[in-house]
Image 1 (tube, helix red, strand yellow):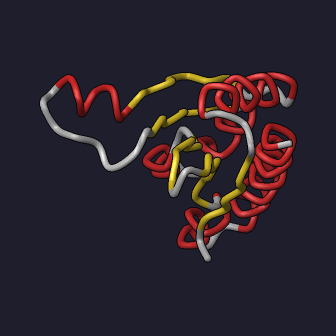
Image 2 (cartoon, one colour):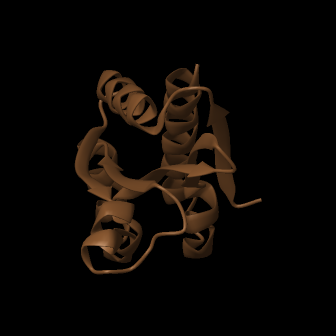
Length: 128
């Protein structure tokens, strides 16, 4: 599977606060906290579920991979989503290693593995 998904008993709001705190401890900044469901409702569209997208970045790792290949920027920043499905809150992300495999560059893939492990740890901590 190309995504990592973790369920939590927290509310969506609690999960968002927890993931933001966990990310900050891991030196990831939240560049954007986008309440997609609220935006859809604002535009007159009924969202399928309460849904928030967080765009997150570790600046030093981002700079390192951009120095390897500027096209990597098309996949930055990393995204983490928090949503409700079947009355369960889930925290999920696409796996950075899967996104970076196509570059065929071991240094980029090594950075993606590092980011992936850090983000999985943050998600697991936030879900507890």
